[in-house]
Image (cartoon, rainbow, N blue to C red; front, side):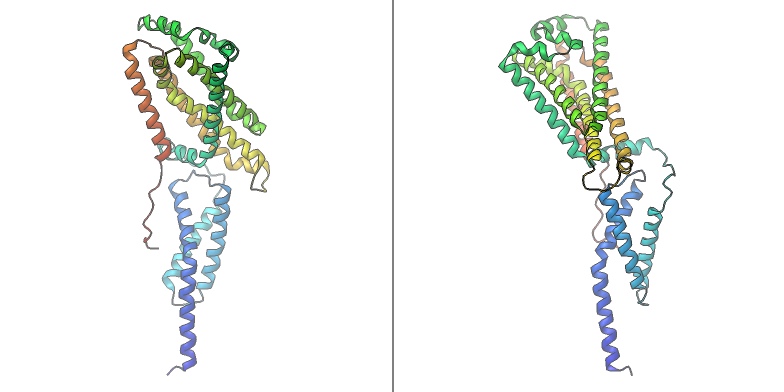
Length: 349
């Protein structure tokens, strides 16, 4: 029969083992979840904090595996950890130069919206700066209406015209008289594409010019909105801007979002990495954001050319309805598309 002291030692060992597994399992589960995120989206580039956490979990789990191998009875848990560590090792030492095949549908339904959400603070700052500028423009015109001509750039000199006069002229034009309207649409598309690209690349100046551009363009919109609304042309303004603006303005905000991501990378807050290394971590996100903005601008240009510039009053409800549906659809898409369902907490290892 075993000695009493041996029985006590074995019992203590089993008790310590149970405590050890209970204590370490949350770390194992966290590492498994990070691996699942990467396997679901192979093109995903984890942020720095997540990469650091992953490496810590990998080291800790590897150490736990060594400790657990001393207990001959824990075969199932040991196999689980061996598999987990092997997967983590493969991920850490994967060939960085290996290209990931581009999957358009996956990019559209997962990569783009998830990248947008990952940098939502930059987007919020971008849209906030724009509307602060809009408020400034409206307030300036309310104080001194004669400042209107000072805010309108030369390429949009037609906006200096009294809104009610322009609306009266536009509403009388035939549906097929669109040559001038297409020229105007091309002007706007060129302008907004330049604005979107500039708000991104000026992020290299530590975001200062990005903020200035967003504020300035917001000021222009604020001036136009105040001018048309106070002249009683709010319905025309909404039917004119909403169909294409529901995609065009978010594209500009994304340009500002990308610019602010660049600015944050330039500052290098929270990391000791060199500038080149910091940009290596965000270049995929920047390309995704500006590509998504480009797609929005393409659609906005199509809508603007074939719908927004037709100002017959009978079209107003349809134009406003389409613009509202587009805006709501875009918000839902960016906020929810590509989100992964939470796995059952009781899922077995």
